[in-house]
Amino acid sequence: MREPQIEFIRGKLLVLLWREKRLSGSSTTVPESSGVYAIGHLKKCHGLEIYREYVYIGETKNLKRRLGEHLPTTEQNAGLRAHIQSNYETMICWYVPVDVDQARSIQDELIRLIQPRFNTVGI
Image (cartoon, rainbow, N blue to C red; front, side, top):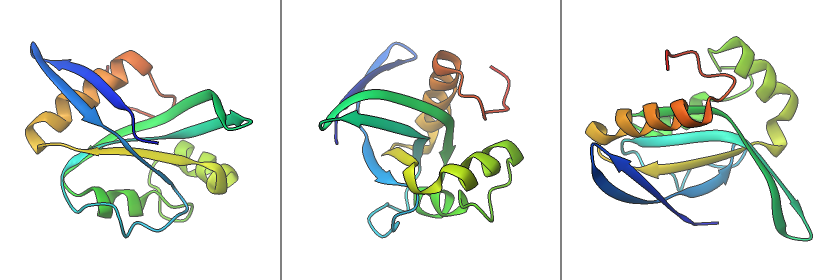
């Protein structure tokens, strides 16, 4: 599902097109560019989204490499690793390529608003 998300960063309007993939799926279509990503769960009923939970939000200089590090055996965040281990096949990753200069601001704003349970950075 691609849906536009509207964000204001330092008074500047950004329209971001988020891409979605299963965390357990191949990363061949994920770009090797900087960006922001969110890891979470999506529940549907008869094809209609009824619930979405974001458990971790990050930013990176290389989306493909970083998303490949969020595996049940290699995840460094202990709480997130345990969560991934028990929910790996159903976890979703949403990502959006953005300039490295914008990535940190977008990540910080999303963490502040959503407060994902496995982010440990100060908000």
